[in-house]
Amino acid sequence: MSLADLLSGLGLGTYVAALAARGYTQKDQLDLPESELDSVLASAAVLKGHAIKLKRALEQTRRAEPPPCKRPRLEEPQSQPAPKKPVPAPNTLAKDVERLMARLADIEQAREDIGKARGLILAIDLARYRRALDQVEFIQKTIKAVEEAEEPVDGSSL
Image (cartoon, rainbow, N blue to C red; front, side, top):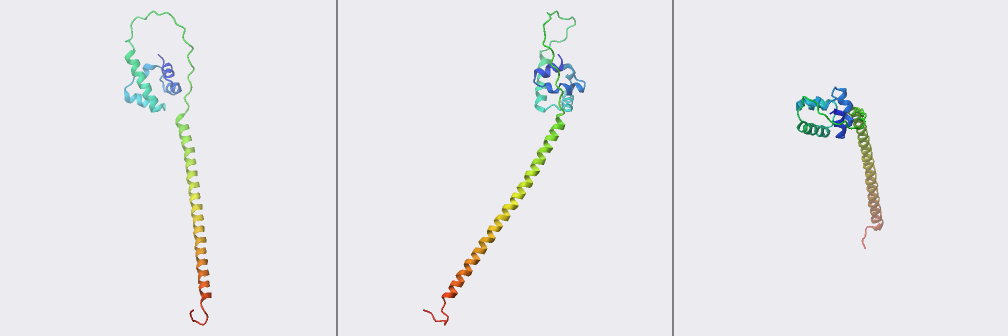
């Protein structure tokens, strides 16, 4: 079984080109020790969840496959669907970095906008506070002027 068939059957056809570029085109070429397989999958930018799915499928096929026969089996030829053209794997790492950089720029812009908004809020609150102090001062002066106007000029009390 080709690796492209296995990956397509698992819904992981996007990795066919990346693995083929590293020389892995047949399923049995991935019959590697766990650490080497992890290294191959990481170099092909296979996502962790997808790598787990692929490893499980490889393990199942290893258990299900009979040992190779010395004489070929005689089977009736079956019409097989045309093989799907492998979809080239996009350079996901570069796209991920580009997307993350754009998000970082958005976050920095949002942080700057929040800082400006906080400054405006503080300025508005400070202006309100100053107006309130001015009003209190005006009221105090008015009360004092009224009290002074009510006092008799000769100093006698009523």
